[in-house]
Image (cartoon, rainbow, N blue to C red; front, side, top):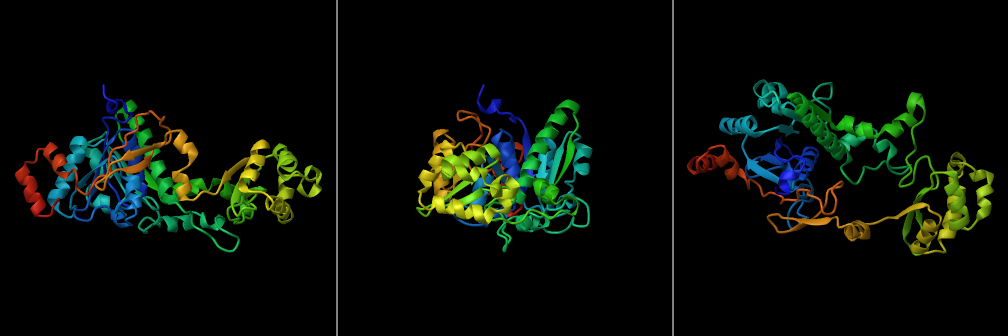
Length: 398
């Protein structure tokens, strides 16, 4: 038996009408687990994320990240014959349909859950949108930054003077991961009942779920957490601290035992442990300016490695502020064997082994597809002859 046949989602076929990040990120997780993912793209153009940049050997960084192990099928869905091809593909092969087209576009194509389930009761349909399939915001366009604002994320992220977006696409990632986990649950449900399911994922609801702590902190009219840059808004000391060699060390204290150890072994000021100004987290937070000056004075005489050595001795959580080059070379990832290579039309590209898979595991790590790379093979499997495929291509249907 091949390794591929042992993957958890081997035998599952996903047809996806996707672009940008949220849906492609969700379906890539399914592909990692062995699902066959057929990505429907516009002829000649494809997923517009292919054009975001050219940073990976001429390919777009977003696209490389979210689209490995998929098959690319080009169809002009404005054409009736292309729509027939898609519906036949879904009817004959699909277990799951995923889409994050413009609001209402999938329904106009006859790809709503109700329309598909009428012919195929076991079908699972996952709609991903900015705000969900109903409500007053249903038809609004939504991009990651806009959802970060609507979900309150920007209000608690950044410095006291300036709100800041996350450096990664957190709203897209949140929606993609909830879509992924919901599809897995729907597959389990279908295995038990034989029935499919409609999944309605909104970026807004996904990111608001991640805002649980700030929301509850501000419950019942209480003031929300203040923006504190890279520091924690309510725990101190917890955040970045400069060292004498011009570097920055991150550290975080969680309890009073750690505070005593921090005073004795890191600051080497055991007297501070008994200082009333700093005798609880709330008091340390209130006196953070005074405590920050003390920490800065001690750390200014030490290198980052010396500070980290003291923090390790005291068993205080710590980390470095790595840039992207540091992450590529991170010793923990290297030692655990987390890097692999995947193919692409431009040659091999490094890729992180998906979290949760062991170093010798069977994660699917197949190439990033070229636009339309699998169109002929997919149509041939549906019974289309080479001549007919040629005519469809000449007519720009595919």
